[in-house]
Length: 366
Image 1: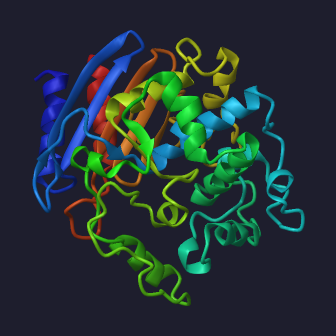
Image 2: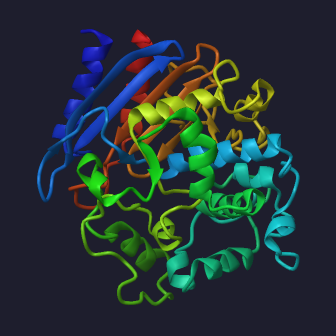
């Protein structure tokens, strides 16, 4: 069986098993794509809509590297910020315990901040949500804790540095220069038939809040109760207006592939070659997880790179079922997008092994 056929079989089996209703993938190098395909239905309810390689997915936390880490690197090149500057210098948080956290610590998840908070239960406005994060006291010292809060703060710092909202900065500095028509925040309503659907309501987050924060009152209407389709799935990103540093990007597989090229020194149209070392450097060598700017390195135990990508590969997952890995030596790029949060009862499927197997099968042919 060819690797391409094996990939189709793998994804088809997982669709049939109910792990996710659709998948789109691209594997390639800078000189061209080697594999591309799509399977399943991007939307199952209220009507079936077949997935294609042009289907636009809510890529969830892929927003962190594809937008926020890339914009951070642009800002560093333009001397608008430096990696050693602190939260307090940008967000007026001089009396906050978070004030001395550096941009590098935010970008590498080594700030000490907790993984997540339901900001929509702690605040009534996006401005208050940022204030709630600034009230925290970092406590995970000398370790990596993957945290949405890091990139929410980093997104706000970028808005200060560029003097524009993060979605506008992404459009002007990434999407337009690369000619991307299928990468965006807050998709227009008429695009919905081309977008992979997500969960009915925020059942997962509502249950998480009840389990982890039983002391917090859940206000009426704070969670959506309809099919989330063409709106960001992440409830914090939705509360923050649909565009944030940690989530909110919608993109098709080709757009993810083309943005991924910007992290390689030989192919970046946006960054100087030397800047791309930010994405391959292990900034957390003494910690349990290897982190570069915005990415996890494959040498991290349990990464979804799989055994057949080099240890220097860097990548990221998205909660909705997305995945990107980049192997710098071969300049191979592996993109897998699914919508595992659609048309499935809780709990959502853990697809990390699917991600690893996909990368291994793709590496054999790419």
